[in-house]
Structure formats: C-alpha cells, structure tokens
Image 1 (tube, rainbow, N blue to C red):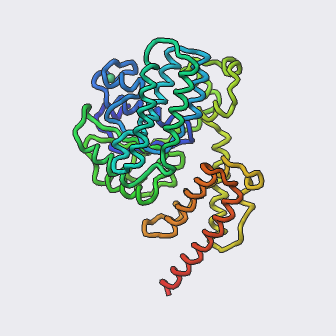
Image 2 (cartoon, rainbow, N blue to C red; image 1 turned 30 degrees about the horizontal axis):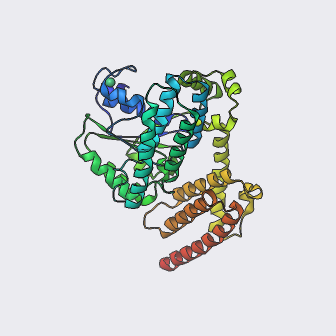
Length: 389
Ligand SMILES: [Zn+2]
C-alpha cells in the first residue's frame, strides 16, 4: 500500500494467478483503499468503505465472465448450517457481485441483452431486500433467491466482452464521479478477443484521468505484449491447502470438522476456494493445445492423442482444453488483421457453446471442429505463400 500513501498510483494493473486465489478480493480491497475518504484502515466506517462491505459500491464497474452458482450453492449451504453476520454478508456480497455484471452502463447499446439482464437482475434485487433484514429466512425464500440468481446468471451471453462495452465503460469513466477515483475491473482479461483488447489498449494508451483499470487473469501470457507493457503486473501464488483452510476459518469461521459435518462435495469447496487439480490439469492441457495447433499447421490428420479426455467424453476438461487452445492460438498469431485467428476464435466459441450449453458430446464437436479448422488453415497458408511469391 506504499503506492497509495505516496499518491503515486499507476493507472492500470494486471493481477495474475491461478483461478480462485483471491485476485478479485485483492483488487476490491485495493479499490476500497483508493476510494476511501478517511483513514484507509481495514475497519474504516466512511460511506465509501461501508459500501464495500456488501459490495454495493458506486464508481466501480466489473466486467468479464464469472460463474457464481457453485459459490452461491456453497454459501447457501453454509448459511443454513450457520446463520450469522459473516455468512449473511458473504452471501450478500456474492449476489451483489453477480448483479454488478448486469449493470446497465456496461450493457448500453446492446438492447436485447440489456433488457433481459435488467428484468432478471431486478427480480433478484427485489428478493434481496428481505435478506438485509434481521428476520429468519425460510427455506422456500432461499430457494427463490437461488433460482433468481440462476436465471440472471444464465441470461448473460456466452461471450462476455465486446468492443461496445469497452466504449461504454470508458465513456462512464470520463464523467465526474462521487468519489475521487473510478475503478474498472476486467476479470479473466484473457477472454477478450483481439479487437476488444485493441480497443482497451487504445484507452489505456490515451489514459483516463482519475480512473484505474485492474485486469485479472489466470493466463497473463495470453494477453498481447503491448497490453502487458502498459500494466503494472502483480502476481498471485497458488494457495497451499493449509492457506485454504485459513481462508475458510477467517472468512467463514469454519473448521475442518464443520466441513465434514456439512457434507459438502469436495469439488464445491475446491471450486469456491481454489483447486490445485484444475491448475495442474490446465498446464497439461495447455501443452496439449500447443501440440494440437502444431499438428494442425502441418496439416496432420485428426490427432486424438492430444485430447485424451475425448474417450471419456469429459465435459469440463474439454472446455478447459478449448480455453487453452484459444489462448495458445492467440499467443502464436496475434494481429487484428489475421482472419485465421478470428475464424478459429469463432469456432472455439461455437464449440464451447455446443458442449456447454446444448450438451453435444465433446468428441463429436472436436472432430468436426478439427476438419473445419484444417480447411481454414490450408486456405490461409495457401494465400500467404501466394502473396509471398
Ligand atoms: Zn474509508
């Protein structure tokens, strides 16, 4: 926090680290301190700091994909087990973080999404009014709350970043604010397409007065080097299981024996906090993605050996693999004018949609995608060699 005290805060940060290591929590705590009107202490009672306690802040916009349902389910179970201030606030925070993504400023000029999100966030918001009162909450109320959150979560588009959104938030950032500084958080920044990232880069280069950008990413190498060079990079390490337990204890006052009493499936705890298995997996998958693209460039036949999970039709690993493919592709061929990147990008998005939303078997999706990609690659390299000759 030395940077804050010296009043020399750079205008943009990249916070990287494995998934669920508390990057957003860190960013929001940093933002709270930047916007604080008084002492900047952890227990500060100023209006601005108060608003951070339940994440109902002004002058903060959070964009990017994030799935809240596992976390909500975990916290609802926790809440039923232990209804106290801490669990109430934890739940309220996650609902407000979900609502923040539906913010009408972010979705301006995307009328279809905007009105859908508005209806569904209104419904969740209205339900939350009861939550903030002291009374005991019934099981049926919690069920309604959960289903309103699910409805809102499902009404976001597959692709969470558009050029229009970057324009919207930059326009918002330029209007004068309640507090002295505005905060823009872009989660999973590597999910931006190259054109969205270029738009952001333009804004970062021009600079917005009194506005700080925080990009978070679990794969910072997938960002363009030009973007990275504009950001002050802070890296987060992987948490050990002991540190995870400390988080559970500190944040939710839970002990290991509570967890076993609650009979939570281990994966839900992992997903909420952090799963080292997923991280190891994505290292392997990212290496496979690289080899897959290399084989593709050589025009080799469908290379099943890189995609072990196809035999088991494993949905979650195939989705991670698609993300790795996309990041790998991006590292290799980054340039807006490259039609191959945008085409392959669209194909990966489509594959993700088919596997995740309409539940087509990954095996099926990968096979047909590979053949389409191969055709594109052939045409692309053909056109390149003719232009060189
Ligand atoms: Zn304060």
